[in-house]
Image (cartoon, rainbow, N blue to C red):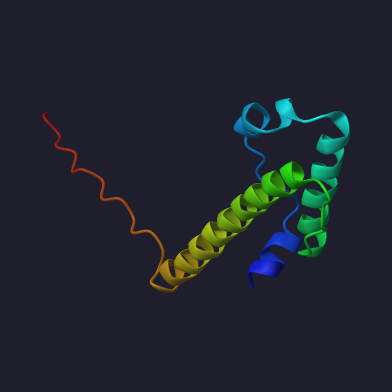
Length: 101
């Protein structure tokens, strides 16, 4: 289920702090390789190997985040379905309006 959630999703979250933590320290070739591995994973759920240990460490961290975010979506979808079976959100009670005239 997780695999299909990731592959079928049009995109994934790419956090701003990835730049400060990782990519600003990488060379252009390292950035290119990391993006290649990450996007390949998102499309196929397969992790390409890297000969660069730094790239591999960053990619594993980002892929773990992608998986964690997908698991949250799956859990939320299941909860929403259960709530829908119970009738969904209850309607709000409107306060009684008293006519002062």
